[in-house]
Length: 176
Ligand SMILES: [Mg+2]
Image (cartoon, rainbow, N blue to C red; front, side, top):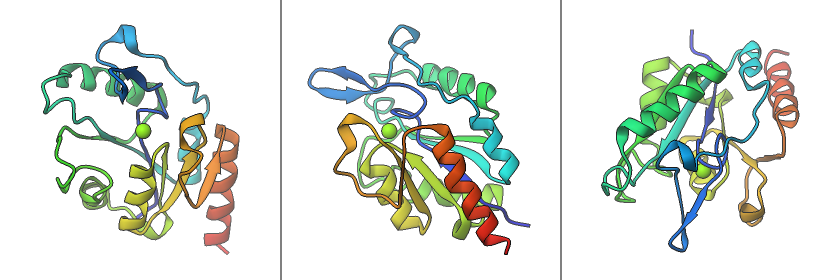
């Protein structure tokens, strides 16, 4: 039987963005990692959602970031929050089908994990995430940050309790 997923962006959700050379980037080593607290995230699974990380890491293809470090950090979060699966897009070109906001990674996950998109969400911090949601037909939840006030989404949260409230409401609505 297919079930819903909460897709999770990584940078700006699990860890802070790194400002460098006038742009925002992913951390390139452990010294650059600053974690956001996401206590209780794993409990979302009790509502029946699979937790699936989907992250763009274009600096891998640009040779500015080591795949091994990306994998290391992702594994850390996967273990800490009991994530069901992690999908990484290493591609630099915006038109690549596996780079958000294109839906490739989501469709891969849908097949591999037998997901029901009509009940699925993404939690992210940028328009790449909310646009991807539109293109896949899932709902978007924006984690409000100083830099994303102009991004439109289906829902906005500032903490894990908000997130749980939205998802619980949806689960109880779907089962009545
Ligand atoms: Mg992000």
